[in-house]
Amino acid sequence: MKILIIVVSVLFYMNTTPAYSNFMQEVQIIDTINCIPDDSTETIYTIVEQMPSFTGGNEALKEYLIKNLKYPEKAIKDSIQGKVFVTFVVGQSGEIKDVKVLRGLTDELNQEAIRVVSDMPTWAPGKQSGKNVNVQYNLPIHFKL
Image (cartoon, rainbow, N blue to C red):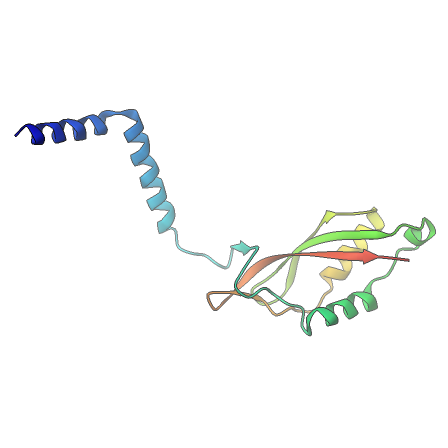
């Protein structure tokens, strides 16, 4: 009988303490979060089971950049060289979207990097659990005279 009273007392104490109340609220929030349906059309992944790839692979990407990159005249005149790091999303159907500069050099070089990436042909999309998903991709664009 004493054990039953102690257990009931402990349970009553736990239910009335603020710490236990906060813990139960967190448990309810976690349960609610886990119930949210997976909407992979909106989710942008950074790492997936199969990363997106440029059609033809890295060598084809390199050739595309060499062929399509136009060095801005002002950058040539000012002898500006270096890397512009761009980030973009490869969509579920392989389209390139949301192109932005992560770290740039000059406005002219940054705009050229954005242009050449935005004009890229469709990539092979990334896959997670066998489904095409949106994947963020970072790419350095080399400007060398």
